[in-house]
Image (cartoon, rainbow, N blue to C red; front, side, top):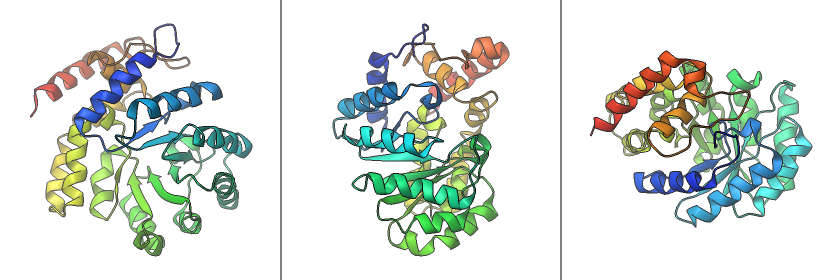
Length: 289
């Protein structure tokens, strides 16, 4: 985003090329960190289409098409399917806080409207005000084109319940992905397929290492230690509303302009002390092997 709050597609291209060079295995375009909540519908499609074009099949692109109105989610998912994404990610409807049956019908309707497109559910109750429970995930996992879940609940007992409820679906290829950077190691050592991470926007190679350690069967201690090394970054990226610190970090790394769209503001305007702290964390990160 430019300082005048217009889209900067040139920097998006630079960012994508950097991720590919850094070993990123897939991109989510217009997720939470991509300011999905402040982009107009046409802007969603434009950014996702540009991401698909630049990626050019070198890694999969997942379009963020979640909405708190089911009809809008259907419309956006249909439009994004037409630009060639490999899948979409559907956040739980926010603010209106539907019950479990409403969540089930919401996701089912979108999946049935675009049956050719694989869909990943996204549960982040800290943002949406609603929690997609394990038994509802298990029901939705029976839908052919609902292929995974991004889970941002950090509680390990909840992780165990989720894996137990979805065991049959997981054996058939359903993917559980971490959506919480602080606990990503705990989910992956329990059999998670990877993560969709905020910190990976800033440190993709280091997050890739955590995923590789977990997927290759390394010890739980090795996976935990790898994530522990990133805790200073995780903490600073969430001290004020995400994605404010993440966007500023990428600006400090000369990857994107300093802009962010209102009601969010650049990090120095939100917390000048945190901006200085983030700069120090980035410097340490760039010095590390």
